[in-house]
Length: 115
Image (cartoon, rainbow, N blue to C red; front, top):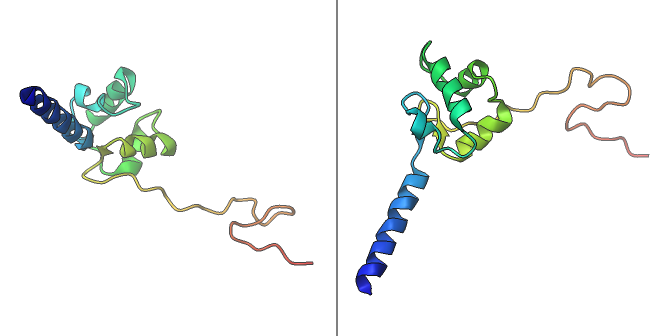
């Protein structure tokens, strides 16, 4: 019975280690890329195809060169362990909308006047 408990413990420990392992987009195989939740055969193929023209410099480079990876997917993939040159995805700061000065629209963080 102790042997079974030990085997289960070791198996769970190894599974946890693999789950926490980061996947470097510039070095990963197709199979390794597909361990990232949300990255299937089609997406991993797009990543590998884009990588043929050179390594990804950073997250904006990856997002710009691989169709289907936008900010939302980049955040999800990074949260699942995908990294670019050792870095996790960091969202860009919010930018005020172009129409923020027009009637009825407020700039982000602008206070509404009190009546």
